[in-house]
Length: 172
Image (cartoon, rainbow, N blue to C red; front, side, top):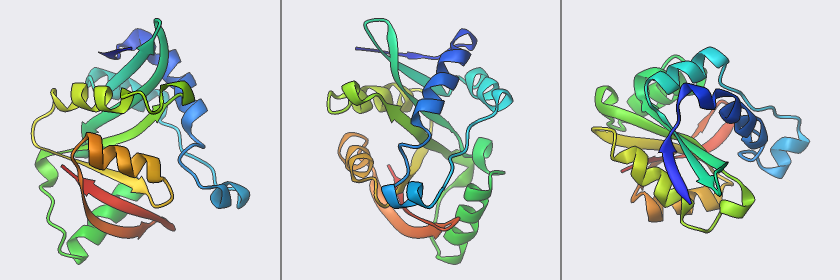
């Protein structure tokens, strides 16, 4: 198992992984209700690659997962993060938006889960960023919540409904 920073040549691989992963974040109920996931555009992925904000997990030289850790400023124009900012301010949740990175999305192939892959990905990414890291984890995603708390030493800062879905707000 190896972790490395993704490069522009990995763009097609990341797009393929993202398409595989997009529905993993939703509960069975949300999927039955017809919820759809959002993909990063090619332009956004290129920007993330230029920021060196994507880490790939490879097993036997095949990509089996990824983690994105980008500055909050990259995400701040997205509706979910605009709503997050408003809710944090309204709830007196203090986050230093200027020195904050966002961990996520993260996706691991089924074969990579439970192997320490998340810890490897997170450690590699965290070593490259300054300041605090936050994550939003969907309420139903117990495995992700456990991984972030145990392997990234994140703490639950708040619980909130954003864009009609319930999330834990975590910070290291």
